[in-house]
Image (cartoon, rainbow, N blue to C red; front, side, top):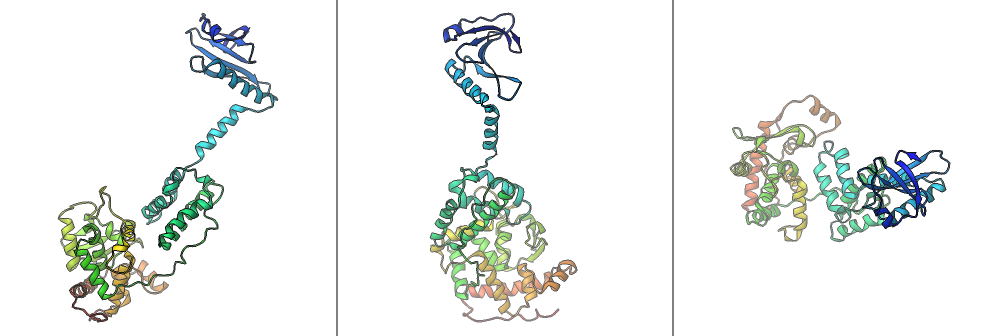
Length: 421
């Protein structure tokens, strides 16, 4: 019998000894196994011997032929076992090979939690959200114990245990942020048919998210600044927090500051639109102590990030926030966040009788009602540089008095001349 696998010479009860005795011919030939229907040894002219299986699935008229591997790699016993499984399934109308391929494809499409994070950040977060790095960092911290598990196998109880561990440390707000961030990822994965259920559905909220109103007192500002000077924290972290108190800028804006953003002739910091929350560039005069800090950093770093970690990459607000969180017991004052420093500056400037519109311009926030914000966003083209300079000069003097203990608690120094148009 001639076929694509060569001439079939007949059937014998195959043994390892009889297989070893087979010799190559000018053309390939097959020798069937009497014990296992459809199984044969194929001997190529080169002498290579392989297992060859021919079978037909019930309900199909086409005979299928399949190689089960080389005789040197697959034993006679294993070849018969594999052949019996395939032919037994075929007699019931099942295509075992197709089923196995489907299972392999399904397994390949099952993402681990770590792979899901990478895919989510790539497709949904990076380039779209300003807080992309912070989101990725929070996801990795929150889900680090289950990174190697398949995302579709994660259940609500798995995530509850992780979030509860965070809440039990007394940081319920962080637990809530993790719940919200992980929930956003799983809802996206559900919409993309990556998982069949949202594992965060039904999880309770850990913190109602009430607006914070923490504002540092004059005494707290003094103690905190002296703690910075006493090397209570790494210099790079201290400088970022100092600049936040001096300028009112966001922690992330300062920590991501690069040398190229500084005009050293006029000592102006221009925050590019790509790093701005409202997607508009912002200029900030560098006055007094703020300029001294920047000058010192520039003497070390001539290009690239002024504030970088051990890897050389720019620090982020999440790095600074995490640092304060893990060292909250060592702080010289009651626990605070980086945003509390920004709120403190805005409050102090307001107490100095500076108009809210100018306070907003200094700290990089939009003030006024909807119509006012629309007017500023689309028509007003001024950076108020000179007025910002006056404000920051006054604030630098006031902050210096606070640090030196010359300003009693509750004392307010009014800035004159800032109400003029």
